[in-house]
Length: 268
Ligand SMILES: C[S@@+](CC[C@H](N)C(=O)[O-])C[C@H]1O[C@@H](n2cnc3c(N)ncnc32)[C@H](O)[C@@H]1O
Image (tube, rainbow, N blue to C red; front, side, top):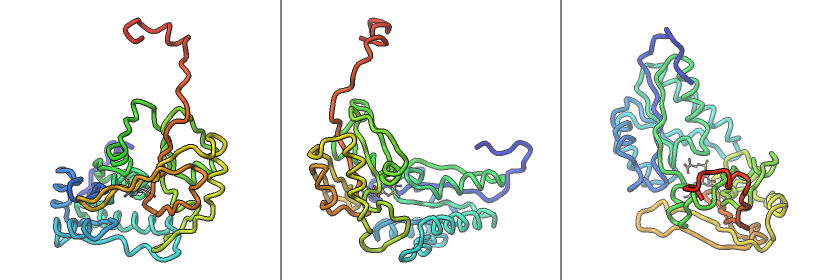
């Protein structure tokens, strides 16, 4: 949303950056610059190496947002508190940077919402892209979305909101390890809804269709987890909060000959 006209740009600002999935190697130069130059660097990252790197980039200004999480606490409540903290710093006139793991705006609502609210209040706010789990998946599993198309859904959203799958496309389901659980858990999440996810997937795929459980490595030099499983075994596949499900196409696309024949020869 554009900053309202005639509104004075206030001194505080907000920049959201991503630390990548593997902070060593996936931090962009512009994200590093934003983190270093910030007067306040808020962060929420998932591993100790990332935390150390972020802190060392801005020793005086770094502050973790992780403390807003608590066992069993609804994640929506935690996200609202994170947003409030970001806006508090911006309103105090500070050049504020928030660093989130992966891409700061991919399956990550708080940065988008904080930017919207900061802009609505007349502050400068922007997001810089980062390397997401999906980017790592394309590289590690060897998938080019240009070849098959690609549908990305949050797993619970797919399950309950009647989302539609095109089985000629690659399908990526995020957050399969926190299925239907809106709260934070430091250990294992309740995945008892997994059979319901299977039920939804069975509307599209045969039970033995091969899928991939994927986990990008967060540490340099370590291999990713890429496990091929038949879909029916998903409830027993030991998925974690960091697992992403990738479902390769089950069929070729059907060509629309009517459109194809009306295109210039050079496209055929
Ligand atoms: C709240 S989203 C955060 C995504 C993150 N912003 C990004 O850009 O990748 C969490 C989900 O991202 C995916 N994810 C996070 N870390 C991952 C990893 N190391 N490997 C594969 N998928 C991962 C999983 O689907 C997980 O449930």
